[in-house]
Image 1 (cartoon, rainbow, N blue to C red):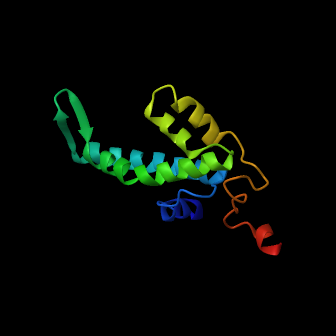
Image 2: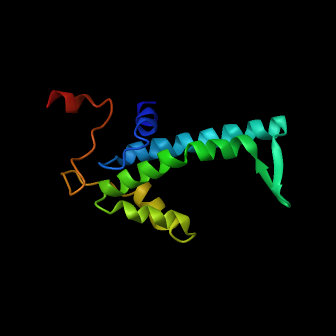
Length: 132
């Protein structure tokens, strides 16, 4: 829960680094939040056709809009953790670009030592960092 709250609190923080663990937990949180919103939409019948022929699930779209900026800021900090520029997050607006971003966000571990974007991210709730 601490990872999710940290990601939501850092919504306007684009400097620094975020760990792979934070990225994975926030992805899981996004998935669950949209799944719950989608099931509520279907159960309550909150389906609208804004564009003819395309169904829009109102609550699920609201959740996606609310989580848009936290996802962008986390993505930029995650790219910083693997020593890449935050501008790489623009690949998410292309179909093919999602593949390397998914790999970098969820499978590539960040640098253990400080890089040009800052020190290695602290693990929330890790007692070993408090002892040092």
